[in-house]
Length: 150
Image (cartoon, rainbow, N blue to C red):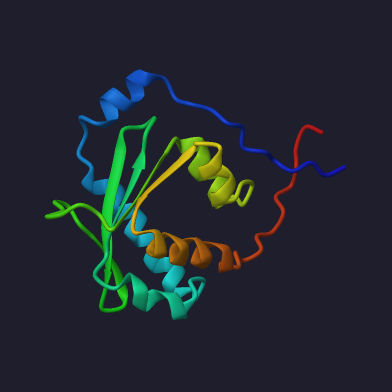
């Protein structure tokens, strides 16, 4: 019998965000950019939408961890921005569980947005381009891990 793992909706305790906001934020940007560039190298991101991302500033906030990452896309690579000099062209804010559900394709961006679990601000047209790029990603299949204890 196979059961799929479901990521529950959760919110980390408030003290986590208050501590997280006091920590350096640059590691978040480096990890996010490394993941995006890996997706580029694996050709998971549709190339036709990448030109619209050129020199745009993006910000991702994880509300319940206090984490924030800003980045841009320039000359074919995603690059971290440690001190943005202007407001982002497109910004996302959500709790960790919403991002995990999005990545796992358990929820789609529209559902999270309309249920007020994902806040998207900035350029609407750019937001639609990014949403369509996310929807077009074909995640590689991972082998099933053996289940123990059942």
